[in-house]
Length: 259
Image 1 (tube, rainbow, N blue to C red):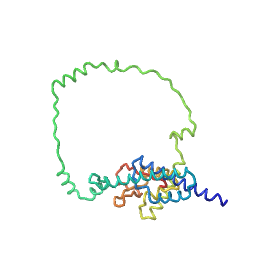
Image 2: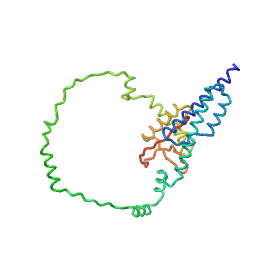
Image 3: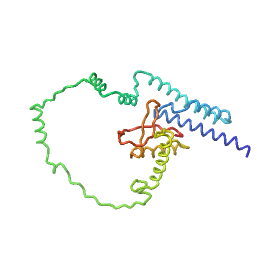
C-alpha cells in the first residue's frame, strides 16, 4: 500500500495537467477572456508534475501544457494592448455612463452629433408602366399553383422515455433541480444582502456540475424567477432578486472549469 501512494498522487497531478491543457485550448478556440486562466497557479501544478515525472510521456505532456499556457499568455498580451488602446470601449461601461447622466445632457449630446439625412424617391410613369405590364403577364393563382399530392396519414407511437427525450412531456426531475437551486440562491441572497456573485452560484466540483448549474440559473433568469446584473466597477455578474423594472437583454458568460 505504501508503494502505491506516489503512483496515485502522480495520476492525480497528471489529471490536473490534462485539465489545464483542455482549458487553455477551449479558451483560445472560443476567444474567451484569457485572464480567466490562473497562469501562476497552473505553473505551480506543472512544477509539481515535473518533479514526479518518470516517463517520456510525462515530459511530453508537461511540454504540451507549457506550450498551451504560452499561447494563453500571448493572448493576454494582445488582450491588454487592445483594451488599453483608444479603439476599445466597453459597451457595458458606455451603458452605465449613459444611465448616470441627465436627460438634458443626453439630449444636448444627441443634437450635437445628429446629422439628418434627406432623400426623395420619385415614382415615374415608365416605372408604373413596367409594374402594370408585370402584373398583366402573371398567370392566375390557380394555374400557378399545382395540386398538392395526396398524402397518407401515418400514426406513430412513442415510449415515455422517447417523448421525454424529445421534450414532448414534462420531466419532474428538471423542475426538482430548478426548485433546489432556486431555494439555495434565495437563502444566499437573504444572507448576503440581496446580491451574490454569479461565479459562486455556478461553482461545481467538476465541469459537468458547473455547466448544469449555469443552465439551471439561465432558465431561472429567463423565466423571471431571479434576476441578474453586471457591475462595471468589479467586472463581475451578480444574481439578484427579480425586478419588474429590469429590461430583457441577452448575456453571454464564459464558464471555466470548476465554475
